[in-house]
Length: 583
Image (tube, rainbow, N blue to C red; front, side):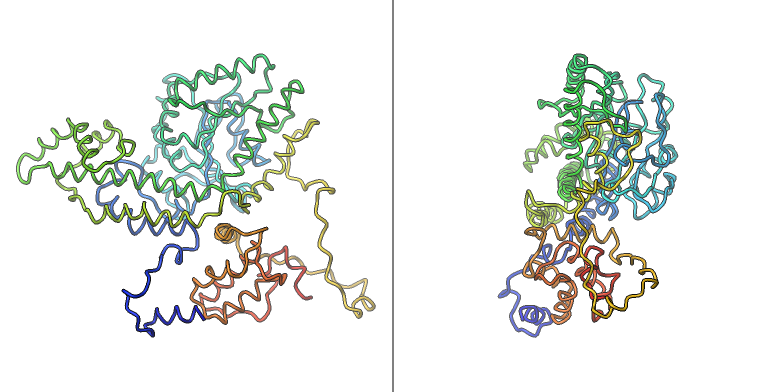
């Protein structure tokens, strides 16, 4: 078989030389997911250059595996009492640990709302040192911030796919800034660089932008594509006032967000109470709220593209940083007068930026802020930096030109149905019912199954044998309890990401499409054939997302040294397919 021939080349049984054999494309054949590819590229080719030129001290801290494996993040920013905590409660359908809601400033800390098996809170210092949490970089802000940071864990369907970040309300004047033991603006910039969506919430009665809020918004520069503006509590005013409030909000934003494009503003009332106002107003709010929910549903679907985009921006900054430091190092004297020479270089840093720009044709947008770069470099000795490593720069350019585009080729085509997208939609069913309803919803929105007429009929039970039909005991034992699926939710999300890259037709992937993925395990063909037979539970010659997860699970079990079962166990079979198993 082709697999056998490929192994023959790998073990040297074939006498072809390397010059006669085509080179393999390593990324496409080695990595199971986009996150795995990005982690390997960063560890092997990007981080060594960042550490050599101390990139983490000039920009954001060095990245860890947990930053790539992290769930998509939604950051909420706004002044006090604009409804940030209520918005999270609205999405979750319930309260979360540590939530306080009131007209006064209630949230006094950053809260990361994450998934957990039980309701609990975790202190910020514990989160910052957890290897599996994407918050290691927050250690740079010290205990002054970590004492005002905590995690809230609860079992909510939505949190399987996203992490929500609640922030303290911004007050006006100096009173808030004096009381902080950390830089609110720098912390917001850290979260913004890792967030997939940034929600700026405004209250219909609170349109002013304070000085600190203005600085926080200005710190979001470079992340304009992530920002969504929400005008909350819009049903508390009549239609005429709403039009004037909308115009005033756009005017205020135009003075802070320096962009020629108009910001998209979602208008609504995001809490668990019925919408007020006229029929025209309610229809407007429902359409606007549906648009925002659709935007949020696409967050997990676009998470892989977002990670690639952020890494590309980071590589460009690191490349420009290496050129700048290498140029300044070259201008330094070899023996005497280093301190005076460095002071002179930093005093004319704009001129040297221009020289680097012209010498290497670097885009102006890749250069750092002049004042910030000068301030950080004043604390370093330029003589201790290495010279410009042209080979390392060439490796970074190869990552940008070839290896990252190779990872992009693994993404599903535009318009392909994303399984995580549909899962998020099911987690927001209670919210969609709120914005669709024409009658006032209940006071407290709770998770509830859809109406009976919308449910799919349950699958028919397997046919009983004649002996079972005749001799069945009406006083027999109760049926056994349902068995938990051995594929964990984390593994299932990972397998769904790989399945999405196959561009399945009608939710199914053919054997020819799945074969290259399974062959990466380097298992014998006979074993892979048995894996396919066990995974194709409905025997239609193709695998859906659940069956593909079974195939990946069995493959991983085999590579770990475990043997395949003769028949598919009930705990390995997905719950949606268990009615097809023989009794």
